[in-house]
Image (cartoon, rainbow, N blue to C red; front, side, top):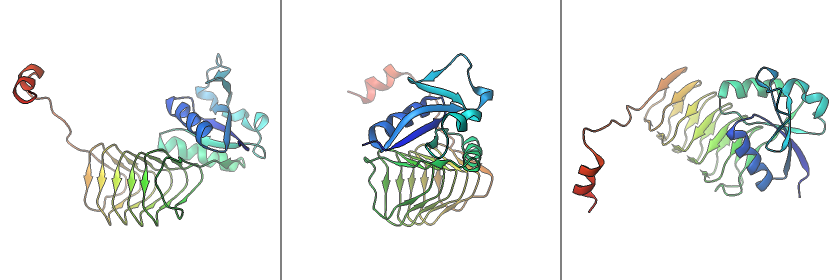
Amino acid sequence: MKNKKLIIYGIGSFAEYVQYLFDKDSQYEVVGFCVERTIFDQTSISLYNKPLIPFEDIMKVFPPESYYLFIAVGNNIIRKRIFNLAKELGYKLAKFISTKTICWEDLSYGENTFIDEGCKIHPYVEIGDNSIIMFSSIGHHTKIGSHNLISVSTLGGRVTVKNESFIGMNSVIKQNVTIASKNIIGMGCVIEGDTQENSVYSNKGTTKRNTTYDKVANRFLK
């Protein structure tokens, strides 16, 4: 039974995805959307068949004593700024963990944290506020700070991820490693040692070979 009413900050496909999961897999009922007036489309009065209002008007329409808020934005910097504004306004920030996630009952996670389906989380894991964990494997005794986004990645045991970092798809973090604050770990990276603050790490990536599909398929795919 739905017993909590929720407003989502965001207008993109991630916001639509978040709405779907909250509606299908939580006690929250999504009743509306909001976004800052600078990016608010005045011609739009609804989003995904629910009312859309400027964030600056949210207290008039959806007061904090009656509604929860969730910030469905992938950008860590924007999500952190709106998180702080919402807390100043007195809003309670919803948190979500999919029933399709594999985890233990001792998992600790903060406000506006979103853990989607397919995650595997070992015991003794702590996750701070305002972090997004997408389809990832998190090893035991790992500590993840606030305002992070981890996407389809593998973290070994006793990893520390500090604050405001992004870990991209198919990245692997070795056990006992610390990811410093404000890091970008690009897709496919393998991190075997502690990183430096305010740094970007990338994998060289895939290169185009000087051949064609027909030549390779005829040789190897028979």
